Amino acid sequence: MAIKDLPSDAQPREKLLARGPAALADAELLAILLRTGIQGKNVLQLAQELLDAPRRDGASGKLTGGFGGIAGLLHTTPRELERIKGLGPAKRAELVAVLELARRALAQELRERPAFDTPGAITHYLQLHLAAKEHEVFAVLFLDSQQRLLALEELFRGTLSQTSVYPREVVLRALHHQAAAVVLAHNHPSGSVQPSRADEVLTQTLRAALALIDVRVLDHVIVAPGQSFSMAKEGLL
Image (cartoon, rainbow, N blue to C red; front, top):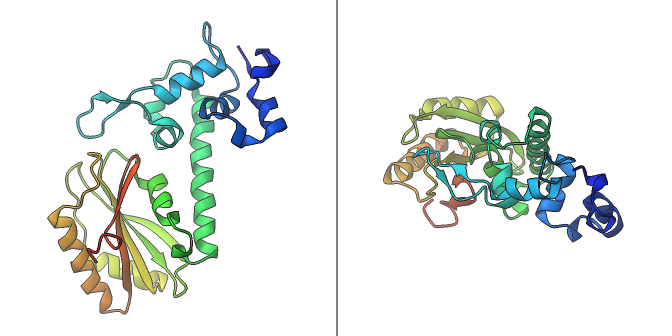
C-alpha cells in the first residue's frame, strides 16, 4: 500500500504539509521516504518494522536489540539494510543519501563557525561518520585558528580491538592542512565508549608530538552507535 492509498487522516505527507514535520512520529517521517509498503504490510507498518528491526553487533556478529529508532537507523550500514524485506536498492539508496546529507550539513556548519560554538556539533558529526563502522577507525578533525573545520581524515584502520596510530603521520597531515588545532577521534565497534589505558597513552603521545609544531589537541572523542565519550569533558586532557 502506498501513502496515497492510506486514509486521508493517516497520510504522513499531507500531515507534514498541513502541520509541519514536528507533528509526525518517526515512523511517519520514514514512511514519506519509503513511499510504498509491501504485500500484506502498508508503508507505515514497514517503517515501524524497520525502526524496530534487530541489528548485528559489531563485535559478536549476533542480532541484538533494535536499530534504536531514527538515530540508530541512520547509523546502520547499507549491508545491514539489505536484510530488511521490502527494502530494495532504491529505498536503501534514499536512506543512505539522507545520512550523507546530514553529514554534509554538519560539515558545512563546522566550516562556517567555530566548532565548539555549537554544543554537540562535533560529536554528532563524528557519530555520523564513524559510529556505524564495523572496524576500528582513527580519525582527525583539523581546525584553523578560529576552530573552524578544515578537514576530517580517517588516518588509520585496525581490527575490532586495536589499531596502530603513527604520530609522525598525524603531524604531517596537520602541517599539510596548516592546522592550528585538532580533535582526535575513534570508534569502538564493541559498543562501549569507555577509553582504555592505551587510548589515554595515545592521546598524550599525540598531544606531545603535535605541541612541537604548535598544534593543540582540543579533544579526543570516542563514539559508538548512540554513545560518545569526550576526554576533554571528562578531564582526561
